[in-house]
Amino acid sequence: MKPNKEREYMASDYDAAGGLLVQSILAGDTKVDNRERLGAKVPIQLFQAMRLVALGSAMEDMIGDGSRALVYQAGQRLGNVLGGAVMPQAEGDLDKYVGLIQGVTQELGIGFVVIDKVDLDAGEINMHLDECVSCAGITGMSAPICNFEAGMVGGLIKTFVGRSVKAVETRCHAIGDKTCGVDVKIL
Ligand SMILES: [Zn+2]
Image 1: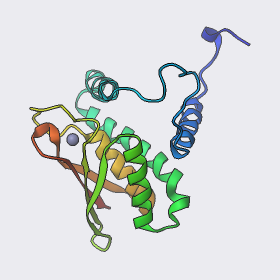
Image 2: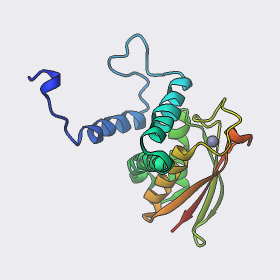
Image 3: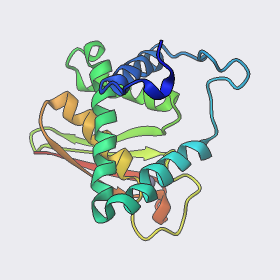
Image 4: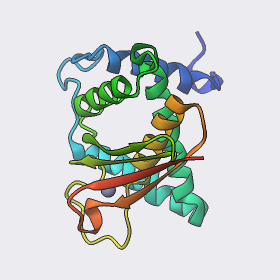
């Protein structure tokens, strides 16, 4: 085997690792290999550091104004992956699909997904996320900061309906709202 520094990156490594991760999520694994002492859980602050610094201000430093769109796209990708993984179990039923997503998001501590309105004829789905993992404890922001989660919701709906969607965070705990609201428009 070559030493690490001589190995070449495989473009598909993240996809493969993501696949293993999704399998573990859907299996509800409470144990993870190589975490004998620390276990499967990490503090919410670590997630927020990854989300707000690594996938937030670092992106802003690198690409400026487009960073929010990039973070949205990243969330959308995650929504596609998670949605695709639970789709077979949902059997084309939106209520079942939402139930499966609610289970996963609660289990992972992302928050409590609550559906406010579904009007597929008008192409509108409105929902909110209580106890959102990204902005819990964060206050005094000038605008909603959960564009990653908005993207994730967009990706989840996009996967179910098989069409492009636009998801917008309309309310956010970080600007003083009680919850994070996301309105989805099917395009
Ligand atoms: Zn928020």
